[in-house]
Image (tube, rainbow, N blue to C red; front, side, top):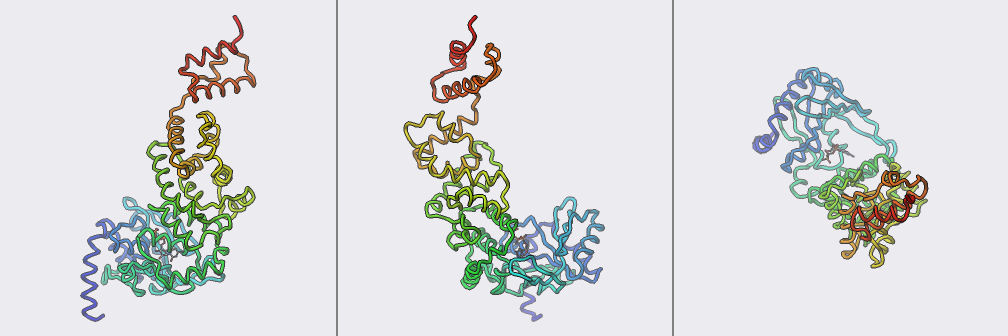
Length: 434
Ligand code: CTP
């Protein structure tokens, strides 16, 4: 290695070794020595290395072994008194190290794709080939953990330069055809790190979706990519970008980003904030974002979409409820004639995720009505209950639901001012004489 390059690397290494938490550094040394004793080489790779240069600490650490990753994982587990938790078909194992966390350990490998979009066939390789099979240059860097070249950066595809220049760049023209989920990953990294998908890479990306590459990806993998986007700090940016790139209809014709929904994206952030601040529970907040990408599907399309993306029953219901409620229901809520009890009847059967989306989509004047409704509902205790009716000697039967509903409507619309007034009304109108 030329002396000047070595000098540069040494100073770079010093810079980033400070950014690695001492616990991780200690474990890295241990891994390096263990690999050396087994005549193997170990590297920290992928997101961890990228994040180090972005001055972020990544909770996930991927280790690649030039050698036998599975046997190495077992040896490391034995040495550290931990357990190998899982294996995958790619020879990756997960080791949970007590007091530290999770390590993914894989064998350095090349990948070949029998068919585009299918899971790859893998073969053992050296580290450079392993880095070449990866998605983007910024994710194709490795830190050598060998004791003799500890923390030396391997960057055969100039990932560091791309990171500095703000470029998300694929390694070869077929990257998106081999693995179309990289389309989502490109957008995710671009928006998360405020970078730009490099021009040629964007061309490869668009070419691949034009070739209907999304059709080759399983519903499970697509669903997972959407969930990862919804978990980002700014899903609205990634969704807008997916919309612009024309990715969504290629996943399913019921998906797309209409101009009106694009305008709604910032409002979704606010509506989610309102639900969060007022502790209104959402089972899957991501489904609020998902609704922004729906092109008002018919029930049949909603079912097809649910099948394609392997949506759960509840998620499918959200899609169907959304299609029925948006935007018609907002118009009804906006009407001056709509009473609070009517709003209750319109909104209460809907999943909270649909309610939250409607809040985001509501025009300003309607929003106040809706936030009032949500706040009222949070603490709503009906003044009249079934057990009261029993106590008053009213014989149980279908009349109960009518009386309870009328009492609730009166309470919501302000016709009753207190529990006392409701009880008075029930006793007068329904209780048996005497
Ligand atoms: N990778 C890839 N192609 C994929 C998925 C992953 O090449 N479709 C490689 C990349 O090198 C990536 C590494 O595997 O860095 C680990 O993948 P993952 O944990 O999914 O991504 P991270 O880069 O760690 O990103 P994140 O910060 O979102 O976890």
